[in-house]
Image 1 (cartoon, rainbow over the protein chains, first blue to last red):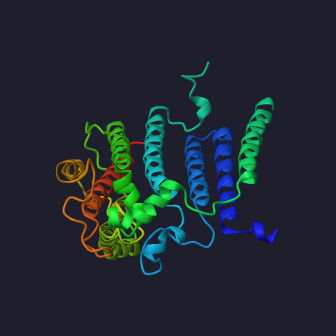
Image 2: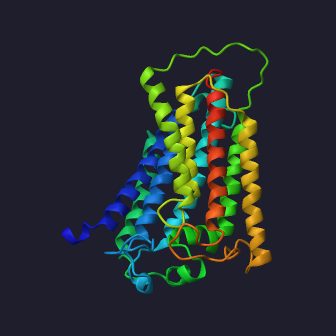
Image 3: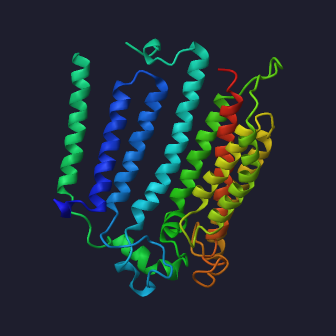
Length: 124
Length: 232
């Protein structure tokens, strides 16, 4: 049991839980702002999951300063690629969240309601 | 009831997929082939101490250009969507901000902006970079919006900074085509001494542009949302 309790497994578990909480929020909530929060949580969970997958035991961050010997760097640092991808994904997630919130704001200005049940234009 | 059961089933299904992946994952013991190349040859090829920066700005610089474009697109749509028509010049009724917030913002905002600049200038040496630095600058400006709601910052200034830095990013990429190996190659003005501030070729310059661009875009989004507060 104890050998399972390392930082990588904790990261993966937290990522999976956050994804599930976000998905639950997306599927069950009726308030538009809460749906946006669900999206943001799903996003964050994916990021935690990706960074955790790139982790390698006993290794340090991919920054070559005094702590890392350059000649032997490939044996000392964790995978930089998931981190770079997550950096990209965080920024895009932020942009998308801002976009969704502005849609919500506009919808509220039109109908004075945040309940998704009151928006039946696309329902069939 | 049926609907709830359906939602429950979907959640269980997704959880099963993720847990199965988790159970089959044994953890990496070594870097993959590409990551190995980036870490082993990054210092010589790119000259950046922060390998993540080397990957983001140079090895996958084209992705970053696309990412900046997406951020620009979402900022532009937010600005377009939340544009307010100044039909009636009714004064917005604003609450007075507290003394604590006002004083604290006067102390904190310049420090936050300075820290943001520090973060994106040192993006090739330490954790950080253009996106993070830009976000810090934008959060400093959001604090200023909260503390002094009456203060006007024109969209025009923000748009000018954003456009100049966007064009600067692309021009640095084109300089790579002319003076180095290809688009967004950072070996334009020499790599410099590894690990110093003036190193890694074009990376600090590109990150300054990215930081200014991200900072101004996020500030623009926050400004649009702020201007719409009273409309809702």
